[in-house]
Length: 505
Image (cartoon, rainbow, N blue to C red; front, side):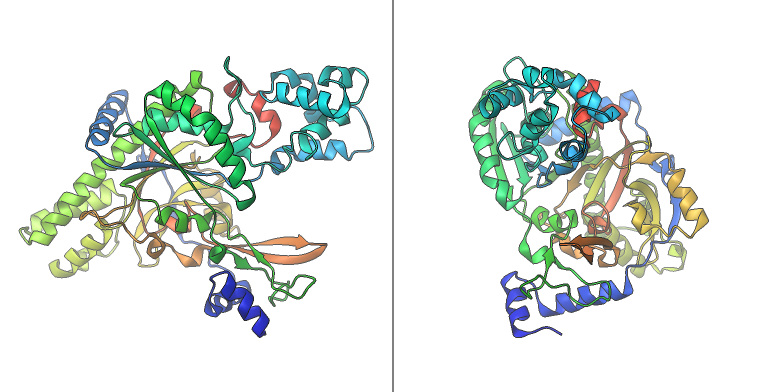
């Protein structure tokens, strides 16, 4: 099935022939649905902290930052903004010339409110000789939209979200990338330095670097810190082969194999290379202007405080197990911590002898840990928090996407649709063991949790394979804790008109 030319192509990406065989087999077999116990809820896997606990955990986090630990803010930022402008692309190619749909009317009625208006107006003058208002007055709305989208204008249809102008300030508009630099200073700086890492696509690397170079000194001066800003690209070795509907390899017109990016789950490799004790993870588009950052900063510190408190307990118990100075009563205490605080249960734990119990407890304590902020469900698409059965028969907390749930199981479908909370990708992670050695994160991935989707290329149907998602299967074997955070901390931008929401003005 694979020629020597294929094998050379595979090797050039750093992928083994065995990996390709496994991927092609996965197209045939698909991925199993997960076995669920329940949707997580307050008191059932989700902590709802009081005001007093919020203050207490912020103090814990402040003490941790002062201890000299290395903290990194990790921002997946390779996503193109093209989906934000789907409606405006449709308008440009429509057989009518004036705003007709509700979306189009909203966009043009409020065009002066966009942070990019000044740049768009200048670009319209440069390319057409007329400003935005003049073009709209003459009925040439499409010229305005085209200038926003196309390469001859702002090129927003092809740029990554991280480089669009999102928010207005007296000193000038800011991109999401800059808002993340500000957040880094406000809750993730230690030793007078903020480490911020962006994963970007190869074609946009230079643009990100230029924007950082132009802006970073201003933010360093404003917040009295140094910035260490780094970038990485998704590795070619994490690309996956595409398949035809009959599960044979899909080929390009020149006969070569078609590879596609493996989805955000590929970023576990990038995360694995970050030198840090604690890593914050947050999506590029979930940012707000400074006037609304108070809740974001407070609750980021809260979930970080919860993380380092739990980690300290886990480390103490691991050192106790190493010492051998424990009795059965102490083992019972550790079981309670694993079950109640880390929400990991083994239904048949009472069957274990003490020696086997110690092996089990050590395994469950000595692994990466994450605390995830979750918000009340408001019908946004995406993953939710669940209590799920793992490969080893234990039950623990996971973030699940709808594609991982068997829709033919009425009980599971009810759990998903009636779930009280939603995952906004608000994570803080501890990635070193109790001896200070970094975990090898790919070892904690559940490889049976990938996704298969239908796509097309040049009009030909194909099947695409996504790796286990970064906060889904890629972190499946981590200790996971959920904390309720307010909806005010979740402000994603899915369409350009979302920038008109009060939270982005």
